[in-house]
Amino acid sequence: MADLSINFAGIKSPNPFWLASAPPSNSGMQVHRAFEAGWGGAVWKTIGAPVLNISNRYGAWHYGGQRMLAINNIELISDRPLDVNLREIAEVKRAWPDRAVVVSAMVEPKAEAWKKIVMQIQDTGADGIELNFGCPHGMSERGMGSAVGQVPEYCEQITGWAMSAATIPVIVKLTPNITNVVVPAHSAINAGANALSLINTINSIVGVDLDTLAITPSIGGKGGHGGYAGPAVKPIALNMLASLGADEKVMNSGLPISGMGGISTWQDAAEFLLLGATSLQVCTAVMHYGFRIIEDLCNGLSNWMDEKGYATIDDVVGKSLNRVSEFKHFDLAFKAVARIDQEACIKCNLCYVACNDTTHQCIDLVSPVGEIVQPYSYDVRSNGKHEAVGTRAHPVVREADCVGCRLCYNVCPVDNCIEMVEVAPERASTTWDEISRNEPAVTEDWDAMAKYRETHGIHIH
Image (cartoon, rainbow, N blue to C red; front, side):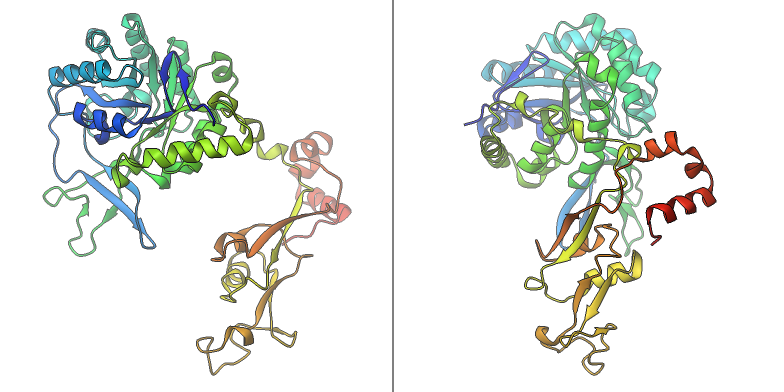
């Protein structure tokens, strides 16, 4: 059985799954219960400056019958008194010495305030401190949260203040509300941070109530921007995680990264590990399903690691980073085409519609007698509503014309019905980078490009 334990910048935990700094880690009672369920650690909900929270606080994005694909919150940091939080942090750490207890912090941008909160946290016996430079709402208007994370100079200065007082590991939590997340990561490294974490929530308005016309969530008829999280943000988080892993300065720093942003399943967790995360923080999935999901997370990840022959988490971390590349290095001669399993096809024609209307027009509808037909032309009386599946036209890919865009694969409602199959390349392997260096005119002049296409037999779709 795979060993799920981790050592994250000196912070040890029996598995890589930590509660993220958020409502699920708001009190000692909650963290006690989470640890009883099996969570490896918790990042305590951000403590710091006095705040007053409001109601409503959470909006959600539902789609296609699925609930809470994303959550939007306008809740601020902990509104519980600082001394209560510090006392409960100490109690939890004493009760669970083998679990990671990290405390998220946010105070006004003054050196004295940061040094004081760092020392107060250390006195609890906590294992680490996470500097919250990410929250995009409420606190940012007061010069905290993402107001710090979006300005590299502030990020470096405040990290330096914390590091000057810290005797336990300091993690800098980066905001996704920035063009290039690598820039503040460099600031954290310059200031001597021990680790990085990402992503915090994304600035958003989750919706408008079509009956009341109010913004969701509505606070007495008013609403505004909030932090967006949950399964819908996972691709953004993975991209930002990979961008850190591909950066030379971040790689050379050796700083571990705590990944978060839409982790709901063990498969999500494995993807974050493969792109460079060492610990994994979870929030929205816990708010949706409760602490019990830890069993599936640990069992699923462990079983997958066993199947793949990975004995430890360190064996997994970053294994897919060498697959991340820029467009200019992709092989332009590589070709894959769509193939449809006619036995599995339910003849819904979604692939035909998507291909014909929106992309490259390389799927035909073929009648049972082998003739290419137009939609519904095989029996206009039925309008496609009452015919038995067996009499409907079926989609057939013209492989010679298929550019391998993969849209048909993505829209098909039947698993494994459409497969993208690699086929022999029709021309010699080359990349855009090689063309730019060897034949620069091709990349600068359309006539030269046209000649290149003609020479190499490349058709325009």
